[in-house]
Amino acid sequence: MIFLIAPGPLKYPFVKEGLSYFLKGLSKWIKVEGIFPRLKGAYSSKVERLKAEEELFLRHLPENSYLIVLDERGRAFNTTSFTELLNSLQGQWKNITFLIGGPEGVSEELKKRAHLTLRLSDLTLNHEIALLVLVEALYRAFSIIKGHPYHRA
Image 1 (cartoon, one colour):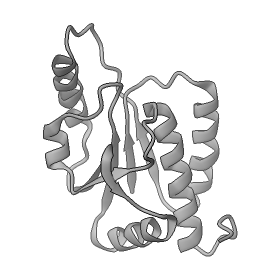
Image 2 (cartoon, rainbow, N blue to C red; image 1 turned 180 degrees about the vertical axis):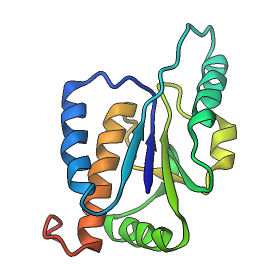
Image 3 (cartoon, rainbow, N blue to C red; image 1 turned 60 degrees about the vertical axis):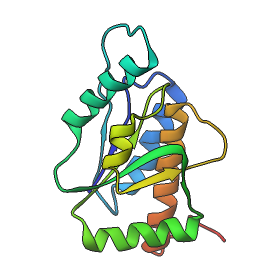
Image 4 (cartoon, one colour; image 1 turned 180 degrees about the horizontal axis):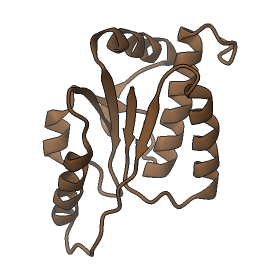
């Protein structure tokens, strides 16, 4: 099973529509659950917000899951290597969790907990856009694993 954790609620209608489209396709091959908890309150500093978001995310992290944190300084993958990673992890782990931070990124504590830090792009992406890019990449990778013709490389 794959878990997607990001700050909620999702605001952009086109992101919701894109997620719906790719998650419906992914559901043929693997169970995916989106967890989008809302961070409540105002925060006077980046550090305070990161700590509050960390505590919120920790409450939602599934047990015994391979944790992948998205960060602009993480490891980059191409489609082939990302597909190989997912294929390998499926055989070793019951759950794979992707965690995307909010406007301030992800706390150092969550990065330390991660098994892998992943970079989707050299560009900095809004967390909702990053989520959409990630879900498309997951759909593409599983289409390759399952022999579906979506990927044409």
